[in-house]
Amino acid sequence: MNIKIHPVTLHFKRPFKLSRGTTSERTNVIVDINGHPGEGAPVYYAGQTLEEVLAGAQDVLDMLGTDDGFERLHTEPWPREVRGFPSASLCAVTQAVYGYLAARKGVPFYESLGLEKPEDVVTSYSIEITNPDNIEGIINDYPDFKAYKLKLGSENDIDTVKAFRKVKPDVELRVDVNGGWTVDEALEKIRILEQYNLELIEQPLPVGEHEGLDRLTSTSFIPIIVDEDINNFEDVLKLHGIVHGINVKLSKCGNIFDTIRIMQYAKQVGMKVQLGCMVESSVGITAALHLASLADYIDLDGNLLVAEDPYKGVITENGLLNLPEGNGLGVTLK
Image 1 (cartoon, rainbow, N blue to C red):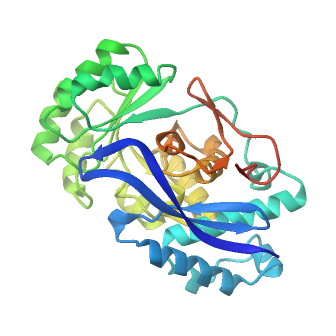
Image 2 (tube, one colour):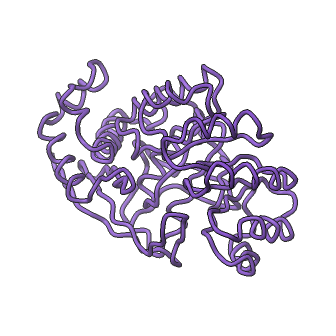
């Protein structure tokens, strides 16, 4: 068996600004098992480093062993020791392991998980914090999406939404603040934004501001969901009744089955689920797409933000996502 672990650096097509800073590249971790890759994006805002994720992926693989250890993942709980590794390490390993096992059985990844095949899935396209005058030009580069997500958290938030609605008055619009508002600021801006037909507001407050989130949720006509506040199953329990929904990302949740458990439980208790992503290659985006039937909203555009994607996988046309042909994840190296 040929197993490789290595970093992959992804360069943005243009500098990408969030409320917490601007970046031009991201370096993720690839685990490849006999040509079946998995990807983990270090959760930098949670303190994960590239070196820790690389080392963690190797340690997890050493603990699992090879084929016998892989197969046990279907029938036995994960060892407690494994759960202590960085979530991005577990994400890269489980994508590769389950993709490899599904391909060996001759079925696509979603089928091996007992899920429905995702077809013509609508994804949003993310637009970074920018001068409102730039919005029309960015949209014109990606004009055919059925949904967009504006990054907010600056003094130009309202003008940015106005500029977007001038160009795209009828498409679905989501906004993501990445924790960039105070409670009072959020209350004021949400009152104004309610006239612009927003589908949802993501992570309006800094991590841990649960009392503030409760205030926003109880007064906002726009659904409030969280991203940075949700990283594991215990977080769902804490947030139930405080927010309308959660944004689930494979690299945050780690093990594929933990991700599925989080999504299924959240929906069972009446929370909306968005399936999102980090900035990732087509490996991570394709893996996430296999889980799309479990989500209410899809935000899988991380591969579209990078200049040179080293992998070929998910097919994006007119803002609709479809899986490539093939078993396992269906991802190949370009």
